[in-house]
Structure formats: structure tokens, C-alpha cells
Image 1 (cartoon, rainbow, N blue to C red):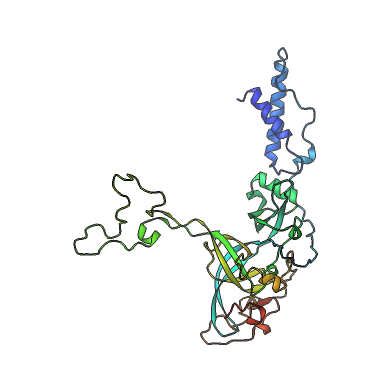
Image 2: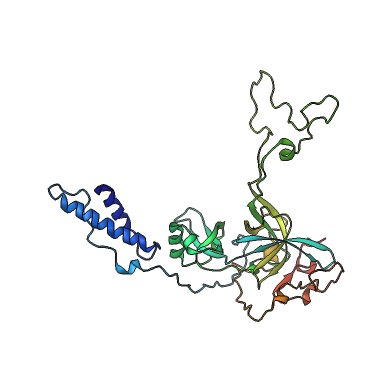
Length: 368
């Protein structure tokens, strides 16, 4: 039902695919062979006229029809370097798990947001020579290979990393470039430092001016009729004869990219790759966020003063086979999960993988 010209274009498309880069199903290669047969038969039947699309002399190899099996590559390592005044580390891509609470060194109950670094790896290096700026592309989140777009599969296969659910770029200095495939661990951030967390806020749909902009609304009584939650006048008279751009009016609320600046890293669990942050983190549970060292002039030098890992901290190799179910759900500081009693224990006596910020950890005394 297809014309020879269409069949020839399909044939050239399949033959132009690099071997081992794209993982196409077996039916695609069967279809390509059928396309080749149809195109060859159509060209032989019309031998009197020259073919507009000559046949390619190299058919697909038999090895390309086998399903692609991704082989894990050895995770590269980096050498620890000293900090410089112009050093800029990479950030990390994390999943917002939810909220919890912990006791600090002063016995105060602190609400925390749990961020999970799920197989956070470097996928690509961007250099000024090829891209115009220096950055690293970081991906996080497990994804089945069949659920990834075939172009994305080729991108990840070229990097030698499994498919990721979310990709972000972080601009870094020249001495903070990381090799492709390097896995960033939660130990990249130290308790007591401050970070900037960027994410997409919760979508609220179309809302009025009272909820969206905090308007007071009209009178509830005294002659007010059907004008209780309206915005009121939104324009002037004939001069200027229009509504000014940016006027606060009803419309879409939420679902915007926002950055929460200067959030405190309260604790870090290097065993489970968790970062506990004190402050507001945009987005729903299960949304992806970017974590990066804070840019605030008062707190941006804390990682260097606390000798944070530079250029990055790898993920620690752990074994969970020796743990039991009860241990996973036991709070290291409260001593129990459900209790209203104050049972404070010294954070230094907690699990070795859980590092909690204390006033002694921070040279700038941000806990005061």
C-alpha cells in the first residue's frame, strides 16, 4: 500500500541506525527486511526507468537483530582536590520522599524534608569548546529501559549509564568536572551547610484573586451583593484606556519552577543516600528537585570552611542483607517510632551512617 519512494525512505532510515546504539524490537527488524524486499521487487519490476533510490549494498547485520543488553560499567572515581576561592561544585538530583522530625542538640523538635539521591550519576560533560559553557549533566532515578524514549536510550548507552528518570545540568568550575558515570552520594553534602533546592510547586489550578494574590475581597454585608470575593476595578478610564500588563487577576496558580534558598542540611544518611533538609521544599511527594550549594553571601563559604568533599563525594558501598525489618523502622535518636515522651540521645551515639548537624559543626553559628 506504500509507494516505492516511501519504502526507500524507510529502508534508508533503518539502515542508517548505528549498531548497538538503539534498542529496537525484533518486529522492527522484520519490518525493515520486508521493506527491503518490497523496495527491491518494485525496483526490479520498473527496470525500464532508473531507480530514484538505489539499494544499499550492506543489509543489516545479524548481530543487530539481537536484543541490546546493557552491561554495567565500572564506576569511575575522582581524586580529592583542595578548595579554591573560585571553586564551584556540582549539585545533585533528588526525589522528595516526604517529611519527618528529629531532635536537635538543644532538645528542639525540628521538622525535616527527606530527599533521596536515587542512583545519581553524571551522564554528560559540557565544555566551552563544544557547548559554550562548562557544566555536568546529572541524572537520577531508576527507569526501565523499555519505558525510555529510543533517543534517550541512545544518549544513556553512549554514556554507559542506565536510563534515568530526570536530568539536570549544573554549572561547575574547571577543577570540579566529574567523569561520566560517577555516582554522587549523600555524603556530597555535610550537616550544617546550606543549600538551594529548586523544584516545581504544587499545581492549584485556576484560582481567584483572594487565594492567588491574597486580596481582602469585598464587604460581607452592608449592601454588598455578589461581590464578596471579586477583585474590584482592574483598569482606569479612557486614559490610558487599557489594563496594564502584570495586573493581579485570577488565573493559573502553582505549577511553577521555584527555588527555596538557604535551607539548612540538618542530617545526612550516607547508607541510605538520604539528605534531611530543614525548610520549605517546593513540589509534591515524589517530585524531583535540584540540590546545590547555597549562593547566599553569608553561607556560601561554609562547605569550604567545613572541608566538604571536593569535587564530589561518591556513593558508599553498603550491604543491607544483615539488617532486619525492625532496625529499618527504628529512629536512631528517639529510640522508638511512636512515643510522646522526650527520649533524647546524643547524636554522636547514633548510627555511624547518620551524621547530624550540631553547633560545633558550623563555624558560622547558624543555629543561634
